[in-house]
Amino acid sequence: EAQVTQNPRYLITVTGKKLTVTCSQNMNHEYMSWYRQDPGLGLRQIYYSMNVEVTDKGDVPEGYKVSRKEKRNFPLILESPSPNQTSLYFCASSRPPTGRGETQYFGPGTRLLVL
Amino acid sequence: SQKIEQNSEALNIQEGKTATLTCNYTNYSPAYLQWYRQDPGRGPVFLLLIRENEKEKRKERLKVTFDTTLKQSLFHITASQPADSATYLCARSYGNKLVFGAGTILRVKS
Image 1 (cartoon, rainbow over the protein chains, first blue to last red):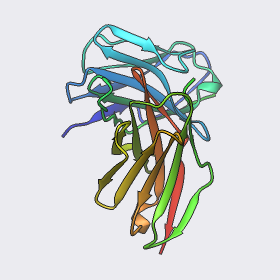
Image 2: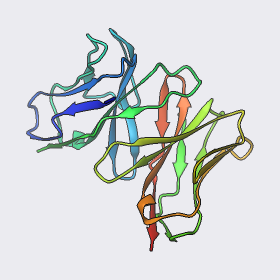
Image 3: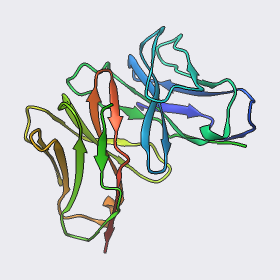
C-alpha cells in the first residue's frame, strides 16, 4: 500500500529537549516536505526536499532542521523546542513539482506539545 | 508572498443541496490549483487539480472552476451528503512549493 508514515503520532516534551520526528514514504517520490498546521493559519511549509541531499527552506523554517540522506526518509529535527512550536505536523511526498500538477500524499500527522 | 484565502466561516447546508466553496489568490495566476479534503486529526487527501488553461474540471459529484480574471477558484459538491462534512483546503503552486489556504469547514445536515 502506498503511504507516508510518521512517528511518533503524539509527543509531549519540554522546552529545550531535542527531538526528531521521522517521515518515510514507499512511493519512490523525489519530493518531500514538512508542514505545520495551526488553527486559522492553515498548512505552512517548513522545509522541502527536491531529492537526496537537496533541501530548502519553506515559509516557516526557523527553529527546525531537516536532512535527506535517503530517498525514502525525511526527518524533522527540533534542536531546542519552544512552546510556540506546539502544533500539528504533516509530512508529504510527491513527484517533483514541475508545473504539471503533482499530488501531495500526506502522512497521518504528529501532534506535538512543548511545555 | 503568495496568499490563498478561503472563507473562514463554516458552511452549513442541507443534505442534497450543492455546496460551493471559494478560494481567492493574490498576485500572478498559479500554474495550477489543487483541492484537498481533511477530516479531523488526519492528513489532507487530494481531490482535484485544475490548471490555469482549464476553466472547469469534474470528478463524480465534484466540480472545480478556475477564473484567472477574478483570481478565484470555486469548488462545488452536488447532491451533498453528511459524509461530505469535512474541511476543504485549496492550494496553489508557487515555484517548488505548494501554498495552502486555511480551509473551509463544510457541514452537511441530514
